[in-house]
Image (tube, rainbow, N blue to C red; front, top):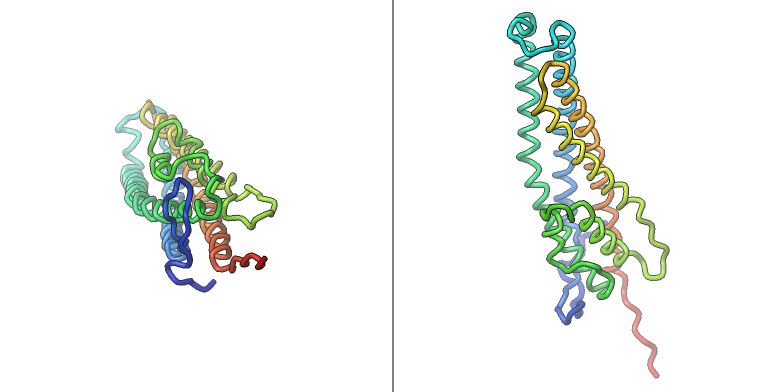
Length: 242
């Protein structure tokens, strides 16, 4: 799709604030590229998870409890698997804030456009587009509300709005985070190779859903960007003269 000029229109948004319609295509492209890198790292994490699970399974079969004697025959392989697992996990943790910042810039821009399209169509204030993600408890549903309102405001006027993409992305995002919390708790309380393997298995599922959530995030970002791009570049008909 062609990239429009940075500012197409300037109109008054809700609350008397001045809002400029700007295509979010550029920020969307940045977010999509970063999410692609994030997915690639997730694939490497899944491979490391699989290797770690295999070694832990062998250790659990030989001796369930943590014991140095059980590591004698798997020492080098266990250390390598654990190192890969930690390395790619840390890489993902360092990449996540970069992706999050780019996403929030894009999300805030789409919200401003959404206020121009539908000044009274938003349940939360503009600052919640950032605060909703970092506020405990409400971060389970406020971002979904914000995304849904922007999606509805950006859809063609009078059309039937479907939230399948929004719900699929958000549901997957919540699921991967909840599983990550459960897996991390299991790992902290692991009292043997078998319990450690169960924790890594939970985290493997979390990482798998994380990659799926990133794919759905790309779909969400690009679909919402396309909706706004079309609205911005569709001429508004002038009223008929009296």
